[in-house]
Length: 191
Image (cartoon, rainbow, N blue to C red):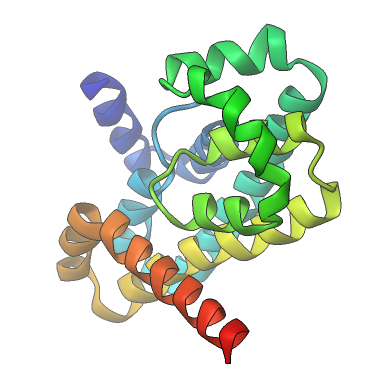
């Protein structure tokens, strides 16, 4: 896993870094274990004037890759989806999760798209449980867009010092953001 991590980071210096970002963001949404942030962050540090373009590319590729995950869940769960979830240690929870998944609406996709929870698990589960495709796509665009554009904005504004902060605490920051967001919706619902 460590070699795969360092290999992903090395792609940021490659002349075809943007294409590498497309491939990594696409694959991460359906089967690849390394998040595109690891490639996106050094690319933005190197070219801050392209921060939002890079984030847009990551978002688009991630959402399209999410559609592959959705298709795996919808069309080939037993053959492909279940083995991927088992590799990620989520195979046993799949059946239990299936019964509650669609009752939660768009929340699982939003939370997984913003936090360190493996997004590929949710893309596969969305297809397997038959989540409406439109809901899946819109929520994926919002979640992945927010995640990548927040990182891009922070790097564009603060540069290299924020890179270290993001690399160490991105999951925590996004988890807190989601908790605040959910808390806000719950508060509005009960008022």
